[in-house]
Amino acid sequence: MENVDYARTLGEIADLLELQGANVFRVRAYRNAARTIETLSQSIDSLLEDEDARLVDLPSIGKDLAAKITELYETGELEFLAELREEVPTSLIEIMRIPSLGPKRAKQLWEALDITSIDDLEDAARSDALLELPGFGETLQARVLTGIKQLRARVGRFKLSEADVYAEPLVDYLRKAEGVVDLEIAGSYRRRCETVGDLDILATTSQGSAIMDHFVAYGGVEDVLVNGPTKSSVRLASGLQVDLRLVARESYGAALYYFTGSKAHNIAVRGIARERGLKVNEYGVFSGDDPIAAATEEDVFASVDLPWIPPELREDRGEIQEARAGRLPKLIELTDIRGDLQMHSQSSDGENTIDELVQACRERGYEYMAITDHTPALAMNGVEPSEFKKQYKRIDKLQEKYDDIRILKSAEVDILGEGELDLDDDLLDLMDIVVIAVHTRFTMSRAQMTRRIVRAMQHRKVNILAHPTGRLINRREPYPVDIEELVRVAREEGILLELNAQPHRLDLRDIYVQMAKLAGVKIVISTDAHRIIELDHMRYGVDQARRGWLERTDVANTYSLAQFLELAKR
DNA sequence: GCCGTTTTCGGCCCGACTGTTTTCAGTCG
Image 1 (cartoon, rainbow, N blue to C red):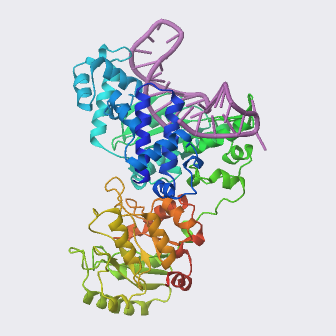
Image 2: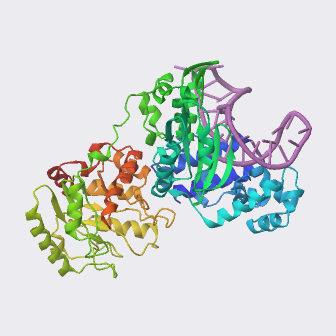
Image 3: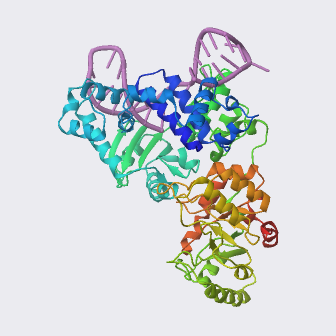
């Protein structure tokens, strides 16, 4: 089982317990444990196989949950969950996800109207049946119908790059409101999560709350959900929800801190504050009723003796302990990047010529770049060996024109079904670096897939494993693969692992990036650009790298060309 | 159900907003 499977099971238990009206702290305990597992860099399976490792040493996992996890591991099932499923229909979980409905109302709908599916719920709402229920009225019923429509229209969160499309013009618009002083997007957007559920915008004004009316009047607004003096909430036509909070200027830092989250990070810091008799909320840090910090985030952190922690690290994944010890990483910056090591030209499925790509990379100040067209196994886009040879000659000619950038001859070589490479060694020998990747046959077993990729990595000419898990955010799950084994082999063989900066890939994900770092494996951040504009996706790759705790020195393409080639060498 | 420099019981983050209510429960973040 994968860690996500354990986490999902515990999450389902939490949902079902919540529907039963169980103690909220018991529910939270399951959620905390699920989160611990989901963000663990080691797999639960390997941990259970390790005699010295104990589940109860993990945060939020005690004797009881350790036993349940072990039962899952050994039998693939959980008796407790089976019992819960007998008592409450699991389909209520879906109903509970509709905005304005929660566990209480979902249970009420089931008990009073025998509603167990979204279809049941829609029928009931359309026939005004919800109005009979205590606590329900016209507005709530209408909101349920809208919620169902939304649910059917869109699954999943917005990719960070999609959120940017809506966020940037909205922020420009909001800044034009009367008296705006500070304006910033907090939440998962500020933490640069790969996807965001909504946008949390904070503002301060010199006087008045005119910005609230300005906000709900924005052209892109489809629905106003909440409209109060300090908080308003809208849904844009795209389906993206945006919250705007107006806070006092003297407590802007506390609010920014509070609404940046993550929730888990905030709770952990609150715990430290509590030990010291302090209270933290969005208005400040309080000793009794006296505010002792509020104006800046630095003040808030200082009040609990912590240095300022970059938003990307605020996930309660060890950043508080490291901050306490003065060991926070100095995170990589976009300007540290000196080259881009995956991009496609017209020869395969790219839009631009090599010449255009070179110009674009020079404009971005890069010292080196690699052209990595696809190989023949990709029937539609692959480049034939003879064409690669011609391409390399063109690169040699082109290179004569420039002494400010090195054009590396390469290819994104397909890993075939048994781990063979899609090009012969004599062609690989012509390349400066060799990038390999899986593009087909995603459905093999975990063991087969791992064996396949490991075999390819062991080929003496290979330097970089591209998008190692194959996932596409919101579109395709990663193929099953033992990522710990890939990291181990990368370490052993001196292979660089790619962090693919395409906003829909961001593969490796943050916790795997951190895992590679801890194992001493260097990462390359590559855009995999198929057109010039996509070279600018580098920033999303750097965001993800920061979330994986990477420093400049952890990333191979922050080094000079000579140093990079040395790092890539087997 | 977890956790512990107030340690084996008694806490566990907490405030804003809404809709339906007549004083507040439920949801949300």
